[in-house]
Length: 528
Image 1 (cartoon, rainbow, N blue to C red):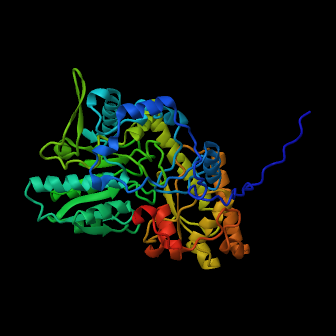
Image 2: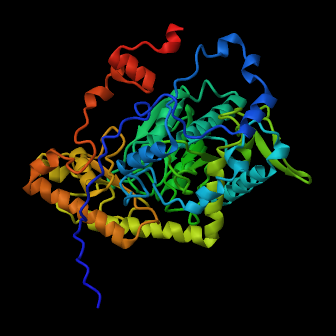
């Protein structure tokens, strides 16, 4: 007879491990080694000779780098302890990083990229030696072209914002080729498009015009038409926006831009709910980009490294960055950028390890599986929307009562007015239940915001668990506000001092900088 299992409370009990772990430099012991150099490796070094001797004097170190000296077993313990002191997508229900699309990355994809031929591939390697990587890259370009409806694709951009920059760089090159650079100096975006669109346009030298929602909460078509002119270089919009709202008039937006000679750029960072359902070219867009490290399940990598795919119409193909990969009768060749190209936007022909992960993800799902993933993402999101908006104090501003695509930007405005508890404080308290939680991009157009995105990866049980934790923290805010204000209670770090984050004099991004700034030490090689 089996013993009954006690039911688990909801939200479940959680306490973060706390090791008070030193950084690895502090664990260093002179002379300690993780691996003993073998006779074979010594022989290889002797055969290669002194490679440093060929370097100019100005490129040689005055002394050997002060790397930590530590045994293999202690290294393993060190990093395992650090992993226990963090939250991540392999530990918790990670639906709280809205707009960043944290989805499950199958572990078999990580095994694929560990083969030495991929892991050790160098951007400058002879194309004849990397035909397999070139073929996978070429095939993924064809797949992205099919998913977007576009004619040509480049995978060179090393991240989402880099992909947006590539879009505006191509747009600028297009207008320059027509002699209209000086005339077309404005770019139009929307307040809930990803902020990288406005940022990239600004850095490229454009005046940015921002459109706000209409009375129903949708991007305002009339305001767009009023802003468009012969000075408009492009519209740069995310759809669905970072609120999860899909613009039903998106083709009218594109047509209006084209009517004044402007181009239309589609930021598809929020594409997890529309793959296989709608395509950028169907709405008439000229350029678009996807994030491989979001939509196609390559790991987000804590803000990097990422990878993007830029897809363009035939008219924009000459401006794509290079190098470009071409299939010939004898294999795959790499061509340097053409005369009209914006040139290189990163070394090599793409972030190959992410390219392989994205390729494997698409191949595993197939066309029907990709559409099913999008439909499940929409289902999960609207199930979450249904339950979150029933928590007292929570709401979903704009497009009231309407469905959302793959995320929602919620608001605790009502709860804040009742209790004085902020969204940021709720987010910190959520960590005590083992959950990550994000507010939103600045500025906080939605008051007291929080942005959730469940993707297709999470089960109903996991979504219920996340909602239960949100409801419990909202209850505490009303009935035990000090518990929320003094959080976190179950975490490694109990309080973070933001003053240090805002003081460059205290920043130290290396161990040497830390010891110099906080202990007044002078680096050894500086003395030498």
